Length: 269
Image (cartoon, rainbow, N blue to C red; front, side, top):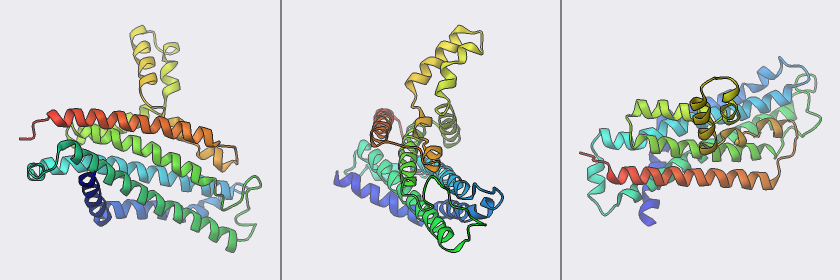
């Protein structure tokens, strides 16, 4: 495990120095900072709109980081032909992949933490400085609501699943194909219910059965989205959080096992 931890630390240091990650995180913080301006356009819904935009910015920016870094890690090593030099050391392939994923998840957590702090700073400043006529407080929940962290945590778990899928796709496909596959995976996994009901829309029994089968095999990423619930002060129980996070961890493990199996047999020459 020390080898995996060392690789993960190296990936995290490289990510911290990466200008693309800096730009994506700063863009997310900038979107959150601009949310109060948009809030002025929706009278009576200002705080809710700020929270909605803040959580959406965190998810979208995190998605970019997960896809970009998840595909870039292995692709960069393979394209630059530095992987042979790395694996010539006492490092096994599974240790390399696990270390890469560990560093990716750490970088993702860091980016989300920075953006979450930025969101709370904006909300705290709004609650302190802005008058009620400009930013009216939501009656059902406080302006600086700790429950928003529930949405951030489940967003992190969701993006960890996406990152594991991106890493898995990058072991079998080119960066462009892996990126397209990951984005398609993200979109499809948000429409599990629609896939199960596809039979009522199309006449092909095969297509309907295939879509229904995929809906039960693929993760339901929509279940990780509790942004609307926390913004409108609806309960998100600890049991739901634990069950959803557990299912996410199971899919992460499944994607990592598949990635390890493929990468172990891949010809890197």
